[in-house]
Image 1 (cartoon, helix red, strand yellow):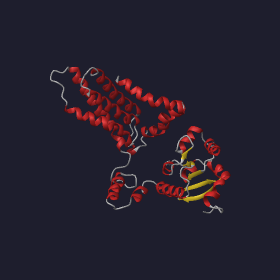
Image 2: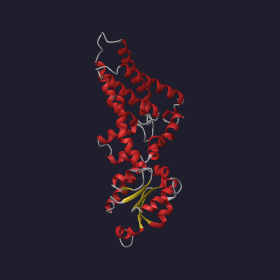
Image 3: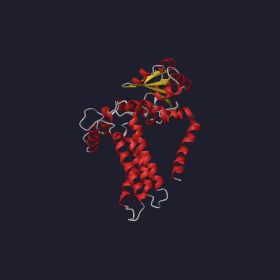
Image 4: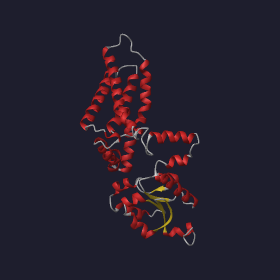
Length: 315
């Protein structure tokens, strides 16, 4: 029943995804997208450059999984269901262990089961409990402990507190405290993390001021916030342009798709435009640049310029 529940919930979202998007896109989203990140981490490209051979990672994960499966099997008829919490916690923690990537959000799904499992430690087995039950309980606790150790590096997405730069614990938590105590504005706090934050804000404000929010659009960028900030209609398969390049094809197909879709707005960002310059042919044949904020440029379809910007197109 435990396994069937997991399988049922997984199939409940996986089957609709396969039907609507196709097996190739789903496989890329769940596996292919992460290959380069995982390869870089395994080779020591992550924070701290710690290199752990993939064979050792695999053995570690298999040991944890063996303890979990064995413990669950031995306790499967136990009316005290606290053992299921330890299975849940260990398996949830095993996900970031296998992923081997320093992204703290991987730990979020394990917070609830780990807290529940730890809270059950006060429940003691009766003195006459079978030895197999005790061994199973000890194995599940050991599996969760090992998984927790293996998952710990996921909390090191940013450098230590004393590291310089904008992506550090000091900048994040220190900046949050300064913002809460009004030592700096929320805008100033947000702007320090990425140059596109202020640019996105300026572009979003311009789009709203000209009544273009909700328009059909293509954001030619690895950043996707503008779709949300202005409720822009997403026409391409995914918001980040690098995913569209993979799904539709490199060096031309994505730009051709944009030309066929004829969005009202195209927003380009300099770095992405340099990486995928094929959008230039679309812009020069059907669009006019009407606003610029830093590296971001707003392009409007030629036939819309006069109605939005005025007869001269100068605004």
